[in-house]
Amino acid sequence: MSEVAVAEERVTRRLSLYTLPRMLLGKRRVLPGLGPTLGFTWFYLSAMVLIPIGALVLKASALSWDQVVSIITNPRTSAALKLSFGASAAAALLNTLVGTLVAWVLARYRFYGRSLLDAIVDLPFALPTSVAGIALTFVYSEHGWVGGLFAKVGLPIAFTRLGIVVALTFVGMPFVVRTVQPVIQEIDVQIEEAAASLGATKLQTFVKVLLPMLGPAIGAGFALSFARAVGEYGSVLVIAGNMPMRTEIAPLLIVSKLEQFDYAGAAVIGVTMLAVSLALLITVQLLERQVEKRFGGDPS
Amino acid sequence: MSSRSIVRSETPRGFGIVLVVLATLFLALLVLVPLAAVLGTAFQKGFEPFWNAIRDPDTISAIKLTLITTAIAVPLNAVFGVAAAWAITKFDFKGKSLLVSLIDLPFTVSPVVAGLLFVLLFGSRGLLGPALSDTGIRIVYATPGVIIATIFVTFPFIARELIPLMQAQGNEEELAAITLGANGWQTFWRVTLPNIKWGLLYGTVVCTARAMGEFGAVSVVSGHVRGLTNTLPLHVEILYNDYHQIEAFSVASLLTTISLVALVIKKLIEKKGLLSAHGG
Image (cartoon, each protein chain N blue to C red):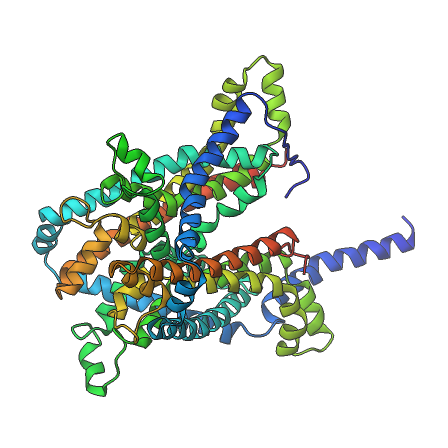
């Protein structure tokens, strides 16, 4: 080994053993501002989010277990909760089926008007829910452009439970499409070609090869769309008709309890919904981690 | 994206045509037709009824409150987003992943529950209610409540945009600036901010659209005082319930235009690839 090479190696070793860890440490120490930014972050988060949520939990926990049970099992409350979860599940299921189809079409086909369709997928994200509510009611009422057709075959949409499902489908639709679409784009076309060359039909390839790969993303899309639907208020308010026991969703019941100054009842329903959304959030994060594992990490 | 991803897109044939037609029909019935209904109804009797609805004093005061609310909520959430992203992406500390999860929390809370939180906190029978009524400050059923509720529902938007972006960009440029003798503020203004400006704009646009359009949370804390605590989305619902259909759809078309503009800006930023780590 020449002298130069020895010197070089020594320098390299010193760099790797000595300098590199210092540089890593430097990541924490050289840049300024951890104290103020982290302090402000926790302060603002606490003031705007954590303390208000704490107040809700505190209010609900001041009640005895029997009181909580009697609020939840009250016929009007349990009807509202059942309707909220049922209609949300129906809307999320519809979105999962058709949303996956839309994601597939947008990712795989070139056709006239594709970019317009791709753009309007995001509209329910951006449109105020009260605007969505009056627009959907207008279109899906008995005299509306679309609702009129359905009413003729004996299926009125606005002011029925079906109307609630339509509104919840509207607000949840982008979540499925935007969760599934990038994953479809990531799937290597060679996988499908391999399946085809082994004699699989297109349907077999889709069901046995692609669907399992898309599974976690579709699951995450379902959960996101369901979570959004359970909490939705504005668009349903106009289209539902809001009859207690029939077309009254849980968020609406919270509002009517607040209007009667029944803070405890409102808090109990609020905490129930909060718990469900937290469970859904955790589900989504677990599913998204699976998507990452399948499409982000593997070196193949 | 990795180099192995090959995006295949083809002209639909056979069964593909059926799929395209189904997808188009679904989006048309769910989104396009209602969108056309809003604009069509607003202008069905020409421009004049639309204009009269917009310049009505109640509409003007709703526009003012919406603008004031947005002008306070969005900058606060932007400062928070930058501060949080700086702390989270430039440093390691305990509780980081908990903090990231907590920032997302408002996304999962129903707007009505969000409103409920502040009524329980600041309402006359809320936790801080008695103390507040002694000082004479009104928060719930007044403008401050509308602003606080809007901050809550738009809380994560800008932080969520900046954290992955700054994570991908890494620290090298900032470290170089510091090594060359820049102080913290200089580093932020001259190195970090130019790098994240498109991400910041993107987050701000999304946040602004949501702040102007929030209904549920604001509806719960506002008390619906016409001309006093009515924002535009609330005004739409009130007009509609009063059977002022053309007026309701006129104000709705104003809000629809705002969301369409926001969508277009969003798409432009996405299309130009300005959100990639080294795209700024």
